[in-house]
Amino acid sequence: MTAINVQMVREALAGLPDETSYGESLKPEDVYMPRSHLKATDPNSLIVTGMRGAGKTFWWSALQNSSVRQLVGQSARQSSLDEATETRTGFGIPPRDDYPSRDVLQILMNKGFDPKIIWRTVQARQLAADGHPLRQRNTWEERVQYVSDHIEPIEYLFRKRDDEFNQQGVYCLILFDALDRCADDWQAMYRMIRGLLQTALDMRAYQRLRVKVFLRSDQVDEAKVADFPDASKVLSSAVELNWPSHELYGLVWHYLAHGPHGADLRQFLTADDWQSVEAGEQRVFSVPRSLIARREDQREKFHVIAGRWMGRGPKRGFPYTWIPNHLADTEGRVSPRSFLAALKTAAEDTADRHPDHDHALHYDSIKRGVQEASTIRVRELQEDYSWVHQLLVPLEGMTVPCEFDEIARRWDLAPLAQAVQQGAVKLPPRHLAQGVAGVREDLESLGVFFRMRDGRVNIPDVFRVGYGLGRKGGVRPVS
Image 1: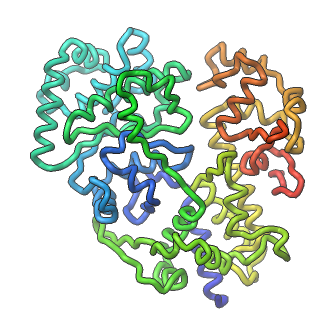
Image 2: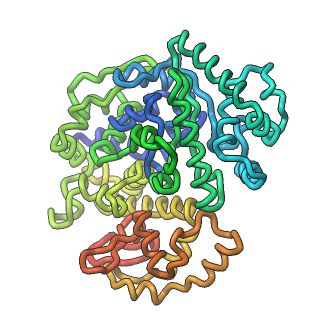
Image 3: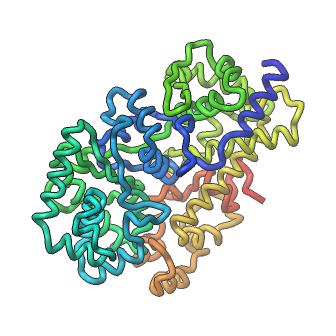
């Protein structure tokens, strides 16, 4: 790699995006499609699951974009999605007039309305024409009451709209995301998700109407959300958004291929032909499978970028495996957002501290990139589960693995229990009533704690570093 190529790659990596959800700013060239994601776009995949940052909100937003639907239809023969597919929004962030807010949902449930009827109302309103009586109701309570009182007319509305879409030969998808924002406690959230899955089952009876629900993995508790007849027919359609390490690198290749130096970097990455399609007014390149499927080739290409070792010799590890290993939770899952952040920070840090380095990334800068990525994952964890922060902050300075008793001695659950009782903690620990053992179980289910064979507790680097815990031979905590 020549000096100019090193600088080019470094600049391209420093230009990786900070945010991967995009929203209304999404362009077709922002779309990278791992195989599991292609399957998730199919109208008959009713449930799409994944960890925080796996791409649920990305696809909720992307499927509303006709150019993206065109791109998926051209790229995935196994998907029934195409540009003509119509989409509606049933719930998500930001709030819209298309669906009730969390506070309104809570009021409706407190007044005794069945969550299934609430969601069916949302769906019916999306399908009703302007002159329909449902459209003439001004509040969600009036709309839900109308649907509750007019079961047969609403069924007719669904059948009629299904016939219309079937004659056109297109699907109509009603998309639901951010269901953790529909309630403040687990019981209410489970009730809402259960009711929504019931409507997904009902919609499955139609030819062209479909509900697609994006859920975090911990929200699919079958005992709580799937205890209704034929629930297995909905669950069997579930697709998980996976990000194995070779797809994470494929994502990076995709961004390099579409960046300011795209033509040069495509040539650098591989001599294979880059297939492309027109989506809207843009040309989108597909990363050649050879850059994804052949792991050794992928590894060698990245080591041209980052060097072969995480230090002055092989004992320190190899960048290609070191980075995802240090960003994974206890289940081996890596958030693409944190992966991109690690590389972006590493490139910026290399340019600042090691501008004359003979590779685009310096190994010390990669370590700093992982520190930054850890900070991002910790922030995401705090946003989803504020109570985790209260339990991990007191552990600062500890070294893991360690005996659980050492951790339990630092915990005082009384303030947390009081905050939960006062309703100040959103989605609190599900097993708080069982004391420290129950909270440990909750942290294990979130991928934050790992129970070793000898019973000790370990914490993956992606959380350990951000909370200031040590591990012999590990990445240093954020100072």
